[in-house]
Amino acid sequence: MNDSPRKRILVVDDSDLMLQITRQALEQDGFDVETAQNMQQLETFEGRPLDLILMDVHMPELFGDDVAMVLRAVRGVDAPIYLYSNLEPEELEERAKDAQLDGYICKHEGLDALLRRVREILQPRAAAALSAKEGETS
Amino acid sequence: VIEELRERFRDRFIDTARQRLSRGLSALDGAGDAHAVRHELHALAGEASILGLDAMSRTARDGEQAAKVWEQQADAESRLATSRAVQTLLYQLDAFAAGGPGGGRAARPTSPPGYKRRVLVIDESLVTAEQLCDELDAEGMETRAVSSIEAALDAMGEFRPHLVATDVNLPGGDVASACGRLRAAIPGRQVSIVLVSNLAREALERLGREVAADAFASRLTGLPGVVESIVSALDKEASA
Image 1 (cartoon, rainbow over the protein chains, first blue to last red):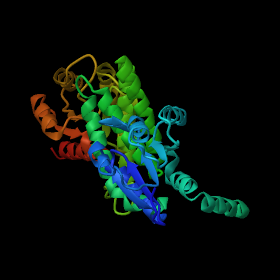
Image 2: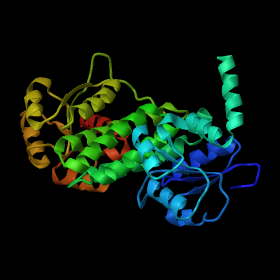
Image 3: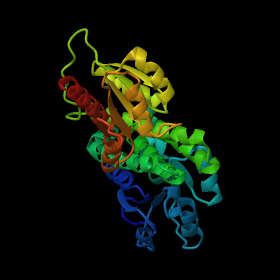
């Protein structure tokens, strides 16, 4: 895990555009963000402290859930790993469960949903407070 | 956040989407590569949804599903559905590109009142043909969409188009013979023919010369480019 007060997130996706947009959104929300577009880039993060890994599923040279399973079971990565994909929720849930991952986030729910879920995962108390405040004003 | 990022990444998204759709169109040509189209549509669906472009995301996901069935069953119906999704995405992308600041098309002078130039559009997909007709209608033309050479030949005598815009891949005949039959359908009157295709400009130009077409329009340039080519050909025909 990362000891710094700012949480560090690794986003793995073969789309450069997706990585750039996701990075911008998460950085604006106060997180440090690293990105990897392929296996070679992903390898460079081995042993580095991370607080969360967001992993796309369909990539040209790999399936994200297979890679994530190896990271968790073989490489001993203890940071939460979430599948981050445009697949249907039912399929994502099954893949995440089969690979013994922490969960999934659907891309087609948009950026707001991504930010909300990441806050819930990394800053549960702050996210709960924000959610309660939103409930009061609505 | 979403509004700001959509604006910041707007041009980048448009470029990336055009590249993806161009590769998708290439993969639809010839024998076809369903897996390649599926990959491009999957990625595009994600990129569109993250920017809140819900209509494009839905179309891309529908296309991805169609490509998945095409990949598994190798059937013509799902291939056609995939092709329609790609065409629809091209139109949606054009609309998105034209809608933003500085992205709109220059206004074109409209035809004189009461005068409408007639364009017959032929495409195996009636949806695609009608989409082009909608754009041409907006330019002040009278249009008709058909999905086969036979239907086009039936329409020639009664509709008497000034120009025929035809896709190069029509079922039941090669494009050279189709052009000959269309020209012969109205004796004594020259009808301009514009070839419309997913082919790259160079290949289409070569084909256009072979079949003596009056002009050609590659869909890779997007819908405004196709409309532009048709209007130019009509202007040339009018001034001849």
